[in-house]
Image 1 (tube, rainbow, N blue to C red):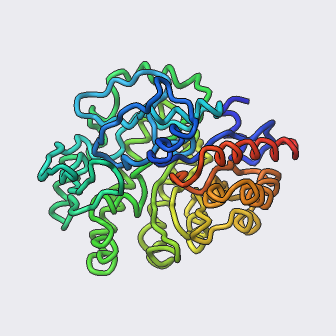
Image 2: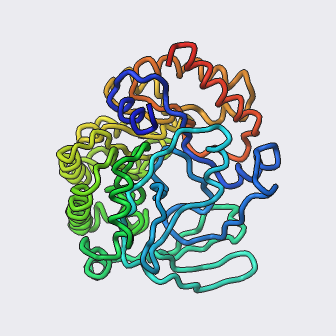
Image 3: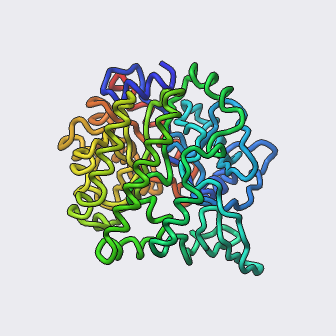
Length: 409
């Protein structure tokens, strides 16, 4: 089975001859540490990667799970000003372990287009304050040693929303597709990797964070609910209109939504707020996606999302990731409670810092049960942090293979 076949069979709870060899991703500092500890690097040093303003953090290095990359096996000719998100260091760990081909995203701009002009507002030796292509003003450390500090967002009121909707959310804009779109369509029809539509920041909480900022969004549920509902309704119809045309040309294997709407004590919004604001939008768009033949509709949300899982499933979502253990998530308990839920992740990254005994304990408790019940792709429960030694990570990946082989998967 190739990567695409294995993904589709796994998500459909069908018998597979092996599980997918994937990981969620890594911090850039992790790859830097591993390169000093023995990870082979061509030329002896990591490729230099300057900060590019955008929706994905410059500190992260993509793995195979999330559809962060638009590398679909053919050079993509974007029009001037269109963002790209590929990094040379993404492939180092992938190549070392001969991982399966990862999920890729249809090269389509599903967000602000045309992007804002990037404008540097302040700069010194250590930091830069800029307005990025999404219209967000952020303060960034040049050494990328921490996450950016967000200062302002493009939508503060209804007038801002009406303006940005008119200027930058036209589903028929020619800038939303690469110039060599027809070539890409022909190429991906014979693909051997899963192809997704959506991805960051598509979602019904996450997207509004990028337009309004988290505090403004949370207070607007109460102070300006009509604006929030209008924004969500517009985005739902916008994505359906945009994706309908694309899916008539390319069949996607998966839809990805990004929310990051939970923390270590639970959801940032109540189930009631979810049901009132997000549920109608999810039901509408998941109904559309299922009519298009997409059976894997995945939500990426960090933190403790236990109280939201039944709501997501009621809304038509079929799977979640990454199931952060330190926030209380337990994939074994989730599988027992939700036997039809597609699950990715959930292996405690903290065990990888402690050595072989801790790694064995974590894998033995979860992996045999999860693989036997199906619908599961094993990875750690978020980006691998820099305090995980290279030797520990190698042992973890080796043990996954050995345990899988011992149960015939």
